Length: 497
Image (cartoon, rainbow, N blue to C red; front, top):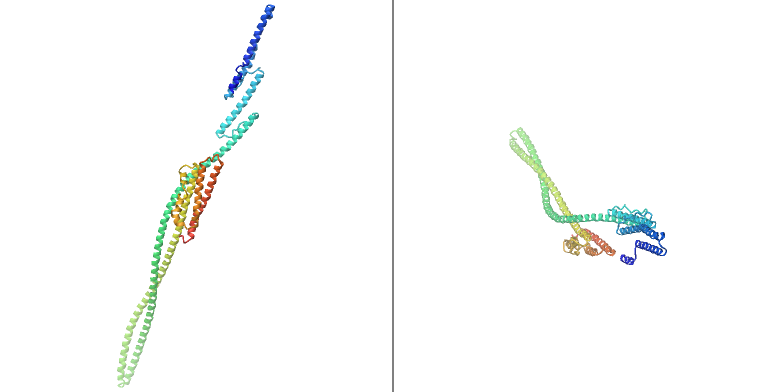
């Protein structure tokens, strides 16, 4: 455009050149007329002074005309500076220039408005760049479209403030999420390691509890046999006690019999003594009877002495029998007490054996629960790796960890070929687990495919990521639910134990 304008105007002189030509033509014409008048009329004052006056007037007119021309040149230079971005340049010394002066002042006012507008825009955006959004552009004093533009700019700065606030919030949430997920993943992996160790320790505890139960069963059996033997001894001691009591009774009867014999001997002795007295009275007639009475008395004396000896023996024997009976009763009572203790001991061993069995059951439930928790933890780590992979545009070690299929991850190996298949394969929850687990992997993989596309600008891709991760979370919840039900179903069903 600059060349076209220059080409159009290149053969046309500027105003100063035109005015100079006019002045020269005016002087030339005046001189020619003066020369013609001198030739025609002779030399006169008018003929001689007219060219001089014309020259002086032309010089004055040219000089007077040069001031507006200079003002226009100044306007031209000012506009050139404005085009270069220097809006601070102004047109000065315009006094007495009339219309040109008015144009210069209007240009100066325009440049004032433009410079003010530019400075306000510059200051506003500079402050906005420093996140000082309160510094809006001044609208007051700006005319027309300038005020409208400044209002629009202020609106844009307000939108920038909202966007900055939203971006700062997102950045904070992103940083907090990054810190949370990175530390959470480390903590989950640490918990995973501890859960593995705990599961191994639970196996050891279960083994020790099993050995304790077997020992308690053996001890209970031994105590049962001892209890039976004690009961048999108690039965024999009851028989011995009865025999001792009978022996005591018989010894009492013997003592009574010996006493009766002693009494009879005393009476016989008295009768023999009376018979001897009566025989003495009878004299010679009763001599033979006296001999017999004396023999009877001697016999009664021996009987009495023998009875006393037997009585002493029976007394000693009765004392020993009483001692034996007392000791037998004590032994019987001790044996009975021992039997009661052994019976109580046997009952306690049965309680210990039952407690050991209950402990094994509880430890088994705890082991299964801890193992299910470990498997849940493996699955949660998989989901966390999935989210981290999304943040990293499906790249990195987390992305590699989630790209495996549902049969190759830790959970898949657990229920396809590991202990999970051995312990839970017959349960309903186990049969439901595979479809939900496969759904988790399929949707996470699909979301990772979407995240590699232009999700920043495509709503369809963005919605696809959210949709598939939502489906993955739904399936994940069902996976957790199935793992919880596995333990419940196993310990409700004795056949599975």
